[in-house]
Image (cartoon, rainbow, N blue to C red; front, top):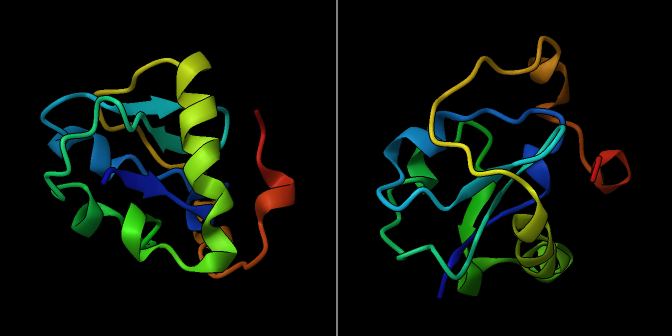
Length: 107
């Protein structure tokens, strides 16, 4: 079971999680992060670091977010690894409580 980044990360893209990852399994896109499930060791260190609760264990993902399992797999293949925390986007706070953000995902 790997951890998965879900919809809450879109346009927020806080990177607190990447600093605690012992295996560098996070990949960065334009406005979203993903976890490479082949690299994730299920340590759970990243989950509490996410200020918008976007990271979940694969088994805990609600049905409405299950598409993010495949998205993490697919996008991790092409996006670069991120290992250091970066500043959040300037408007990240504005997006924290927005729902149904999948249409804003930039690949």
